[in-house]
Image (tube, rainbow, N blue to C red; front, side, top):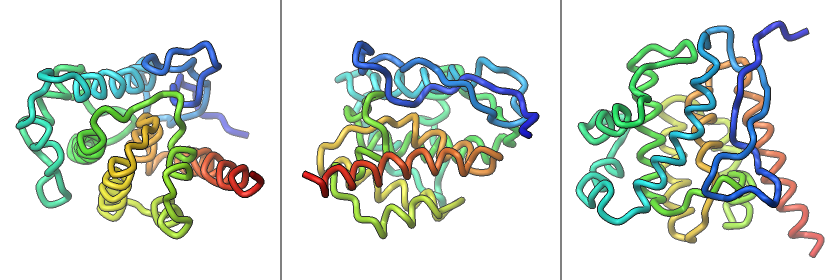
Amino acid sequence: MNDQPAFDRSGSPPDDSQDSSEPPPSERIAITDDVADDDRPKQFASSIGKIAKMMATEGALGTGTLAELRRISPEKPFTPALWNLLLDLDEAEPWGGLDRDVYERRMATLAMGMAICAGLHNYREPLGRALAEAGWSKLRFVRLMEARGETLVKHVRRMAQYLASKSQAANWVDVGWLLIGQDWTTAEETRLRISRSYYGTLHAQEQE
């Protein structure tokens, strides 16, 4: 029996009445014993939407800042643009049991991917479905789901570049949980949720 506390997590597709620019209704799941503040998971989903809006709004961040974020890599994860973004959104303090360096690196990867896909965040387009609709191969998908650490950073970059090339919107909250929570006890749950969406969409396509 799971005795971990449950926390709000937004990221699943909302009902048809939900605005795609607003976070969907939250779910109750066990995230980790290390999360002491149950406002942070819900805030995280909302912050991703705010980041996406800034990136999609002309002049909100500037082309230089977006370029700086796109250049983030495992070798050079830290940039003034990242810290300014985290501070502006009150996301600078680590949570979920992560130390500061690990947290900032994972947020850097998230910002990098979102900058590559500027204007392509949609709460109503689950990541798995988006990848299937864009034609992301099964082999690449399996590698993405299996990746951890710096390998995951590289796969997220490739995924973002692919989605951008297809002008395919996706729910970047899913990517956020995949990155931030990769060491949590619920990491497998996140990957299974994304996988069900991906393979379910492929199956539906094959039946058409």
